[in-house]
Image (cartoon, rainbow, N blue to C red; front, side, top):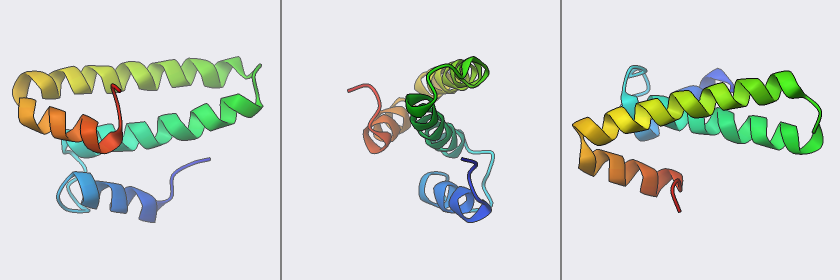
Length: 89
């Protein structure tokens, strides 16, 4: 259920520019999206896991805050990122 080190570095390399650029907003949003998808799949099987459901809501809120910051600072980057990740259909 957790994301491996190799998967993290590939996400940051794809979205953040370099694998070591873990502070990039785009990379953080992509990592949160990956974690949200994993937890969502877990909750489809375990409907009564309420503590995980609370954690999922926390991650969604954090991703929302980061997306709004990115939208304010870099609109073209924001649009490109949501297109890549398949958000806001």
